[in-house]
Image: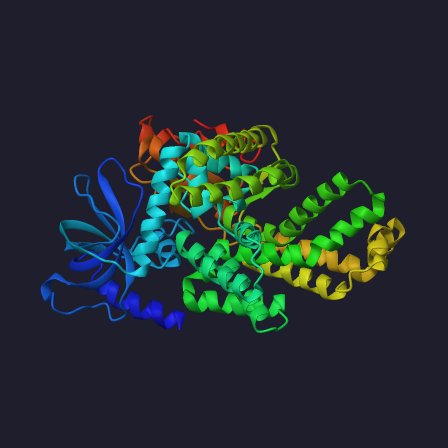
Length: 562
């Protein structure tokens, strides 16, 4: 169904790509604008080629697209607009495994953008979806008005799913291995459900129905991100099981949710967020109690505070066991900051989210006096959290950039992990004792089968992830870095030569860090033998120093650079 839906949309939209079209639609949301354009998300009611306005090429109605207008044109949520413009389905990646804007938009069920030549406003739409988007807009306006500049961006991100705009904050959370906080997911949904249960509604069925309604409202409010959708669907199925007096099986629920997500949108299969969400959840379910028991049994801990610290650490380790190959494959990064960062922020993020939602409710109810009091505490908590992530990011250098692993290596890892799970599915004290026993570990290491398996494991991964030029041919790669130039040459002797680094749009976008460096890692290159700079115009040389400046020569080496 999802595949049919996307093909049925994609094929007719491809026919009008880069052509002038006529459209009619309802404004749902105003996106972040730049200095020259306003950007709106609209739900299209009609879209047609300008040469045949009477024929609606969109057989399946109600698709979402972006509309870009000049700065002087302003619309409100719910306005019905019509106009003419140039349609673009989105740009595919211009470099191997580079950012694919088309796929990114399709994952969000947004099927293109229009650069308007003429646009007019008609009547306002009043359907239920517009109502929810108006509530969302009001929340955004009030948070931006009520909170400090450095805090409001973060709060909009974790409370209603707005993309965080501050690059430094994003970098700090990524380096601290806390990016999951910035994505609306199961943690956020659990706090929403906790808040509903605190209402102390005695009628159990009424409480469960209320949970279902609020979860659906929350899903619309936060923009239907795949991680939030996963959490809401799984919790909704659990609630329905309770209403029907049926036992909820977490594994069956997970499989059904996974199937639904990919039927709902086939492009979710390429979404790293979906894989991280599912695998992180499975890691916690499968390993957290096991790891917790190992620590408790080994060190005989009875102190309640230490037990809580170990419990939090066990959750973090369990999730990392499952997601780190995905992090390596999609983001070329492995971080060991996660235990310290999760411990440092665990007792802050919960109160920040709960207090944030309370403030949103009070804003809607227009209880401004209480809002003024609570926002003081919220600003303090957010300030502490952002300071902690900044300190961890700057001072704990446990992040490692690695070449992109072969997809077969990732598959092989999960195959081995599945075997371990099936082998040790009964998590009892005997297994814990055997894991902690030094004699048992030595016994396994001396076992011939284990030795052969370990050798094969590392040998296969070494072969799959090597970058040898086996064909002994000269390879020349031209890298698209916007305005500037950049060329990668691999000689028959497997020497890597990089010519120029490019600049693109100056300080607005770092092509060295965001394009050239991932391009090298995707080709399993972690060492440049020669770096040539053709001349010293900024679009050729300015971003070249990203390798030396950011990685301090530890991950990339340079010889005979000029």
